[in-house]
Amino acid sequence: MVSNGSSKRHVCYYYHEDIGSFHFGPKHPMKPQRLAAIHSLVVNYGLHRDMLVLKPPKASSIEMERFHSKDYIEFLQRVSPKTADQYEHLFAQFNIGEDCPVFDGIYDYCAISTGASLSGVARLNHGLSDIAINWSGGLHHAKKREASGFCYVNDIVIGILELLKYHPRVLYVDIDIHHGDGVQEAFYLTDRVLTVSFHKYGNYFFPGTGDMYEIG
Image (cartoon, rainbow, N blue to C red; front, side):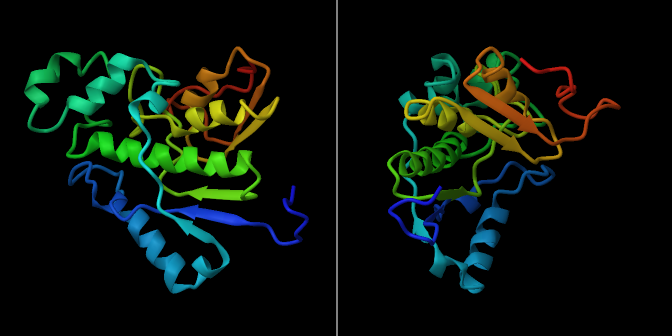
């Protein structure tokens, strides 16, 4: 759908200059610095000239608690490498470990990625943009009360909940090789969100969900 009667689609692209500075650990496959590299490519190829480039505000704890439990978000606010010993007794409860480690700025990282998705959704809801891009988002494994698969806060679920305030139904398409289990689980019992996931399934491949018969 094209807004404002224009034949050219209006694209907004969110980038926060701090996003590439977060570090999950030297051997961890999740590398936020790749997001800075992507932004560099966008600029050097001149793609930014065809988009509205915006710096996203950080999502608030209240916004993240629209999906996640309050105790989990408070844990993310307080935990850090310096306070890890103090909160280690909660690691198993919130699935913190090798895949989802504690690192410096963990809460800010989540706030930036979620804030970008929420800001993009707001522009879509109000007809200010036709397409919103957030390369730092798409963290589809995070659950209501726990981290999973390198994901801590599920910006997708939070964004869809905002879309549902303005639209009767939402179609979510996931093309990651891993099943978007966190998003499917969040909306499994509603007919207002259709989740379509193209992923690898079987042979104990993470996360082990996404069977063709999981239709909600």
